[in-house]
Amino acid sequence: MTRTRKPVGRIAFVGAGPGDPGLLTRRAHDALVDADQVIYDRGVPESLLAVVRAEARDDAEFTPAEGAPGDVAKVLISAARSGLNAVHLVAGDPFGHDSVVKEVQAVARTAAHFEVVPGVGQAEGVATYAGVPLPGVRTAADVEDVSVLDFEALAAAVGRGSLALAVDAGDLAAVRDGLLAAGVDGTTGVGVTGDGTGETQYTTTSTVDSFVAAALGFTGRVVLTVGAGVGQRDKLSWWENRPLYGWKVLVPRTKEQAGAMSARLRAYGAIPCEVPTIAVEPPRTPAQMERAVKGLVDGRYAWVIFTSVNAVRAVWEKFAEHGLDARHFGGVKIACIGEATADAVRAFGIQPELIPAGEQSSEGLLAEFSPHDEILDPVGRVLLPRADIATETLAAGLTERGWEVDDVTAYRTVRAAPPPAEIRDAIKSGGFDAVLFTSSSTVRNLVGIAGKPHARTVVAVIGPKTAETATEFGLRVDVQPPHASVPDLVEALAAYAVELREKLAAMPAKQRRGSKVQGPTALRFR
Image (cartoon, rainbow, N blue to C red; front, side):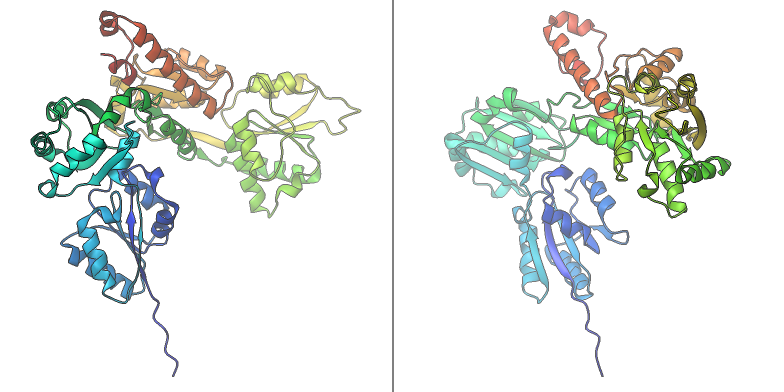
């Protein structure tokens, strides 16, 4: 009789780093993606857990770590014996926690396969994000129990170089008393950082004598940096000095499109809030698109002009329904209204023939589109797959140039449901520092479902048509990039924030207090 061999599970103790999901190592990522069960410490930020959950297997189970080290080890060992891959996700580095070391020791006494995946230590990682170098002889530690600290050794470390400690905010007074008792000069520079590597990281600098009072209001785990490196924060602080750091930015787009913009905003330090204002749906009657696809295959068209990523997606979805692919575009030229749309076409293995070099709009495309020539262009018909509410500018301009235009509804845009009440209130009361509009419909729909943004909210628009619509709705347009694309729009908003900061820095203190400029940039100077 042949016995079925029971699968063997694995255990991984994974360091999450100080909190920024981008600091997870590749090995940590692989272990988490392959996990059947993830036990996480309460010190792991919810923002990091959200990213991990999004990339994990659909059936992966996430539970908080409960009980003593031995209890956690039993859960991990039981999962492995059942053939599951189990992960204990901990803040910082696994061996920075005495409790985790005990768990590893308990697992090592069994036959279970296990590994320990290092993570960036909380103290060192946050010090770097706070712009505090730890040169020379340095000490960095993630401290769970302040009572066991050797303050004499810490004082010696401060004298030789720099010190970074991750501790609970409630233990700051004990750390101050211990350092002073060990002989550390009370005027030595100290930095205290809360929400280290997070969206709202904040660092206050003071001295050993005064850092407890300076950190009043900090909660949870904080990182304390002590020594000469604290004085270099003015020049080296980069995380908190990004152009849009702390800005709450409203992103009213379709749910599918908001992600790319939010990622760019986060890179500049902003806190994006995605509010779907448009839902994309198929046309009510598919007959037009069916005829258009057949015409593409039969050589009916000389050009296909795509004016949006949604149009590209709609055509390719229809191609897929009929078992067609990029080869059936042979002989048809493709024009795109902008780079984002062109990238969507390239993703299907096709290089567009025409993208406006200047203004990326209907007018910009028409300026570069050649008139129809019966000799050079034996086929004189253009396919224009678009939204049901698109303007007639492009179709009319092509007709004037002698082309026959099949203006086909490829998809419909409908207004999304209103956002939650707290979002609507924030929009109207100035709770957002900026809003980014990427089309006229996002303006109309946001105002329709949530109301007009407050006058102090910075309004950024992607192009002239969107700017016209915003103005029609009584909004002041503050930012418009030279080229109509999402990357350029975010870049333009970041540049605007830098200009605000420079203007405020040049103002006398009294003028700053009276300035109408709002948002985090202004608050830093008040």
